[in-house]
Structures are given as structure tokens and as C-alpha cells.
Length: 268
Image (tube, rainbow, N blue to C red; front, side):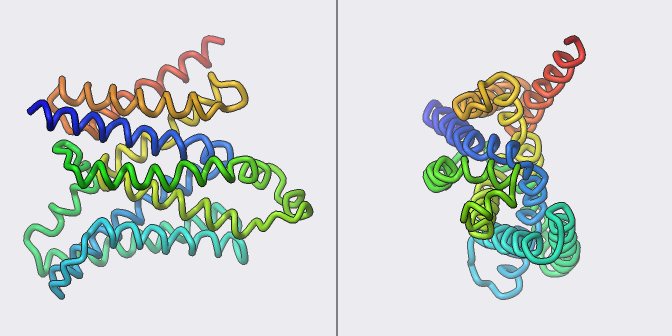
């Protein structure tokens, strides 16, 4: 029991590190909406993976299909926003595709599997109530990939977000940075959604970045990391005390932080 509890809280810390790495750059680059829409891609990809395994007996890990779907749609969003549409329109079109995948394959999955949608629901509520070594390994691997690369390109991302033409004039390859950032965001989102759940990821992604901007000097990554880890640990503890899934605890704590920020702002 102690070993399982330790593993669960280690997963919470690893998830907090991953969120802390991506949240502030998302907020500063005004791409939070993109990351949140990626959760739709993750859910659609999960249902697609469940359907393919049920029909063709492929034995392909569903999280891998979900991640590949999110990455593919993130690249599509980057390409549409680079060539044809504004970023918000490109994101809206990507969400349309992801939602269509979810609807069609949810219907098809019901026809071939009596438990398929229940498996997909795990991506909404989260599977981290019972943490595994595989979950921890996946979360740590994503954090090791995402965090250093985000640190490496964070300055360029901010410059591109606030002065795209100036960044282009300076010789920055805006398309490459956009592709890399969207791909890293998709990887982080899909990893978080497969353990914390789609709903908790929705709530948690923006909060640490917002806290860092509000209380950190010029948007401190240290504050973002600290806020994300504290939110994750407090959320897991709250869930344990209330007897609800960790995703529910994280949602409650994150919601309370958002409410606190609003009240603080109104009082000033």
C-alpha cells in the first residue's frame, strides 16, 4: 500500500513538472487554446485506437494511437495557420476534425465492443487513481523531452508571439518554431490526458502559467513549475481525502486557485 501511494505521488510530481514546463510558454505565446483543443484530439485518437484494436486485433497501445493522432492534428493546425488561416481559425478546424473522429468512431466502437467506450472514458476521467510504473515512466520520459526543448526555444516563442514580422526579419524560421512548439504541446497534452484525464488536463494546463505571470517576475518558469507541482500534489491529496479520482481533486484545487485569482483581482 505504501509503495503504491509513493508511486502515485511520484506520478503527481512528474505530471506537475511536465505541466510547469509547458504552461507558461503556452500562456505567454497566447497558445493556451491550442493546447486545450489538443485534448479533443487525444480523446478522438483513444477511441480510434480502441476501435482498430477491436476490429483488427492489432494489439497497438491505445495511448500511442492517441499521441500520434494529437501530433498529426497539431502539425495540421500549424500548417493551416502558417499557410491559409489565422491561428484561431486553424485551431477551430482542427477541433472539428478531432470531434468528427470522436463521434464516428464512438458509434462504430459501440457496434464491435461492449467495453470500448468505457475504456475511452478513462481518458476523460483519468487512469491515475491506480498509478503504475509504466505511467510514471511515460510521464518522466515526456518531461525529459519537453522541458529542455521548451527552455531552449522559450525566448524565440515569446518574440514570435508578440512580433511575428520582426522575428521573420531577424531570420527566425517561424514555421519550424511553430511546428516544434505545437508538437511538444501535443506530446505533453496527450501524456497528461492519458493519466490525469482530459478534464483535469483542460483545467490544469493554464493555471500554473497564469500564476507565474501574476506572481512571478516577468513570468518566472520557477513559479510555473512550483505552482504546477503544488497543484498536482494538493489535487491528489484532496482526491484521496474525498474518495474521488485524482483528476477530480486536481480540478477542484485548480478551480479554487482560479477563483482566488479572480477575487484578488476584483479587490485591487
